[in-house]
Image (cartoon, rainbow, N blue to C red; front, side, top):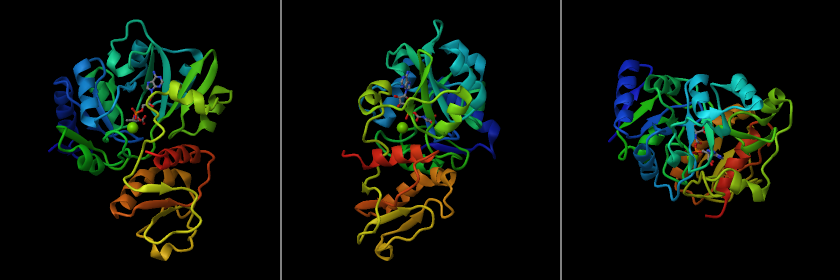
Length: 323
Ligand code: TXA
Ligand code: MG
């Protein structure tokens, strides 16, 4: 079983163990503000391979390389002016920028799936300290078995991958709870590859231009790895429910009761006060809780789709997609 080290209580030991495992070419579970990542040395093929092995990923998708500062970012990525402005405005934070690979970048081709572009993100919090101490970018997908819900606590990681990895760093529940927003500049135009923990509107305000949304056809090409069925609980998922059928688990929003909820396996409210930030932070954790009841279906009540609601809706549609 993996060692779990609390980063606030045992900072020095957490850093020391993390560096030792990473230097051995093995992955660690790393807390970030979005979700927990399964992180390994982005410059080593064997280390990246072990990420895929632990996750049981069916194919090699490009991974995000996590950096600690702009110097490291610019060593590996070539920033156009718009991407640079976004990095300056939102890093460290829940934004991934897909940029051209810098000529001298040592990021391994297995981490980029052979693309000549690179997904880069500077995470906040303890992850950034680990990267700074390690001195190389860390490739990190979410720390869950492929196709399952992303972990927002160390306990989620331990339940799922505890037997397969050496170390889990525990910094408490992820503050944002949704994966990063991914954007890419193409010919001066900004494309949204994945909605996420940073609202599209905030990006548009800084970039001074609208984000082009992925069309159904382009999406698969633009963000390989964005499989339609993803973020999936064991139970089936029913969206926009206006009632609850017997035995279903209910996840609702805004404190509004639904007819039939007295017969639900469990009733969870993502945010009784209707706050999307709170809802995002709880989403994955509540899906796991609802799933754990053994209900065959999780019903979701309708939720707003503006702001962070866009990313929440994206994850719900993936959870509901046929598998
Ligand atoms: O919040 C997050 O982004 C978390 C934490 C751990 O940082 N990571 C995460 O990684 O969600 P993952 O592997 O689940 O998602 C990475 C996404 C994939 O959809 C992949 O297709 C896209 O990033 N991506 C990475 N590099 C890319 C590139 N060069 N071009 C297009 N898409 C890329
Ligand atoms: Mg993932």
